[in-house]
Image (tube, rainbow, N blue to C red):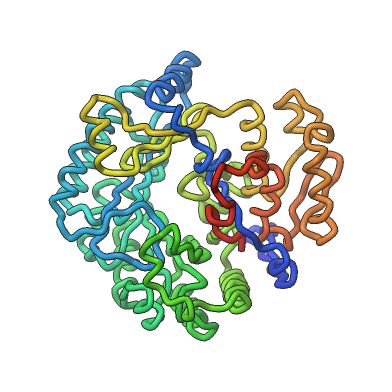
Length: 477
């Protein structure tokens, strides 16, 4: 078990690695960046239903803050492990066309949400957002500021994902001037053999220069992404990568499990399966990462995330304000999430809506003067109830049964009788404690939180026609 205390002496949530239990329970399952999950969205939900959701907010005079996600799908080169919605091209003129349409969508969303709430959160993801030139990024940020009312820099959380191979020290300083105050760097692994196996050659010195530049430029938070389970990874190579990451001293670390799904993601077919670590080694790699990062003073937030004790994520978790959305863990629990760009997913009111997944479809809808919503879902009361419950477990590792009963007209023990019965097996394995008023996930159960949440997922007992569940989801560990 790895316990840590802050400078004030209060204990942080612990996480305990039990290889036998993890080996027994690891299965395919959702990551719960939403509930219901995106594979349950329906084509019957379109532009009209999205407008109805926004009209409902306006009617209720909603003043909830806004969160905005911008998807830039382009990359110069393909990383073989990647499962993102991306377009690999060296023809940068494609980005200019895309930006014209993206600005059109931003204008439409800006008008829809005018006078409602301030924008307190912005996240650029991809693809590679820094595929855009410095001038294009400056122009796009100016356009966003003209369309939305931004909260001041010290109050807002404005983040961008970058590929250190695509930015100079000067570009990092420029991004800060353009309004970004958080930066996330894709690293994945520092080992040259691993980098070669996934087609992502990225020297450590290059990455460190970008991190140093981000500190000099005054970024409030620096995050590093790592992946365990990549081809050619060994315990020794991972130990060396962790040494370098800890020395770089980022504020947050995202540690993702490589999901080898070549039937879904074409680039993964270039990975030789014989180079992948065995399931046993993969578990050892995870245990090593948890042990080293916790010993270095990072707090295990949950799922794939670690943060320093004074980071906003760790603080939000202690205060019960943490939530999960399509970007992972977030500190803005009460925001309406507006997402712009190809394939982007919005969460507005009691709805989710996803944009067209192809550039052709995206451009076509906007040419018709319509938002490019292609599918989505309106949540029923049962969805809202289960969404809150799954959020609480994912973010806080505990659930107040009394608070659920106060918010919804149910008797928990009756409504969730089947689920409580299923939880007994987890309780017997020491993964959680069920009391009359609380469900508490133990340190041993934290790594298996996806399994626990799956018990409350009504849709998992309703397989989609012709779809085998393991093909849709990654392994829970």
